[in-house]
Length: 348
Image 1 (cartoon, rainbow, N blue to C red):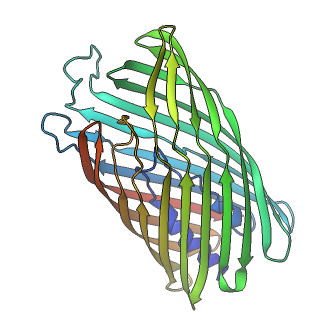
Image 2: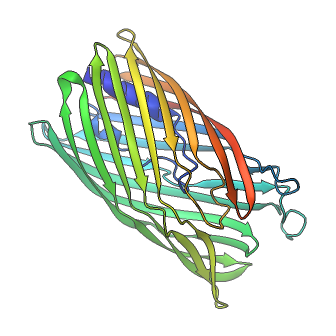
């Protein structure tokens, strides 16, 4: 049943998306740690949000479509020790205020107010199994960020080099009933930025906050699995500030942490097919005056399926996300998003 448990979790992960909590995207997933033997996994997700403002004349649209990926490989060194390497895009934003207040004013080829943020991370982890169900895992994450913002403060482009943080966690498993509880802590990572503010050289800094992931699963009947997760990210106090010699400019300031919840049910249909249903909730974080995260509290429902044959596994899923209204700087936003994803896994 352990293999089925991992399959159901893969279904849940293929179409995950997060908007309400800061600029979270991948959830810093480390579930590949718990695959059996040697394993490689590739994930793609496509997200199509529709989050307009209901204020006449402000913006016909905010969040825009994006694609994200992750690649992981897990190597079993011996009976107790394994090594995992994960490349992903943990944080990001694709916000473009079409027909917004700046669209007729800024002397740029694309005058729409916007916030485009990309990140890359490479995480190396070791896991040690004690043999009594308990295991520990930990390692190092290298991460870099870059992006551009066009707002009332002007036009900013900036990026960082790779900076480093840590990962540490503990897990307990009872394979016979597919029980697993895993807690993972991700340290904050501070980035020094260099770039241009209104085409003049500038420097700045941003700190991606610490986070905690609690993942759990257990068999509740033959071929039936209950699984879920809780993720908390300490966004409160996160700022993006730059200085080009004329004083500090605060581009982004988050004032609330975010916590997201997911609960799912998986069912093995036969030796090849399994399906899963997952529901999610995330309370919308207050983001102060920034338009970087215009979505409020979200509720989601997702459905996925996995086909397994020999050492090959393919999972696909789709998720619908609904956002409650959120007011940023007096401007209300609400809407929804559809996410679809695919995951390819090979044991070797």
